[in-house]
Image (spheres, rainbow, N blue to C red):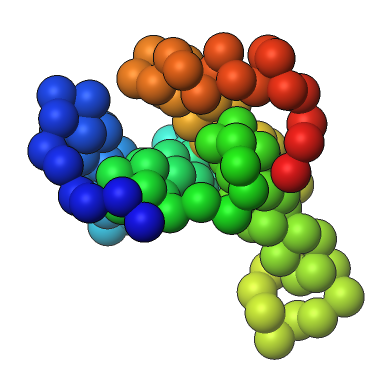
Length: 137
């Protein structure tokens, strides 16, 4: 394991983590109540919008602390997004896990895509390695 170094990119990832986590909390605690009280039609943002930020926040935590599941960060992001989608699909069959909602799956997919874009913007060597190696776990 590499020693923890503070770099500009790591600091940027911490800032992204703080912004995504805060946005998710605000969306969940403040906006959801406001949307329900005022009967807003927001296409499910009040219910499923936090799921976008859950994926982004978890990916940023993995990135900041250099936690890897595979040899490539793109595959790690896809695995994190897939995990949440699988849990959501399990909600169809197991009521005790939660309630199934298609908008949640779409939100997890959006969060996964945004996480890959953020990786491209903050960690170009990872994208270059992914283009070269492909989907090798």
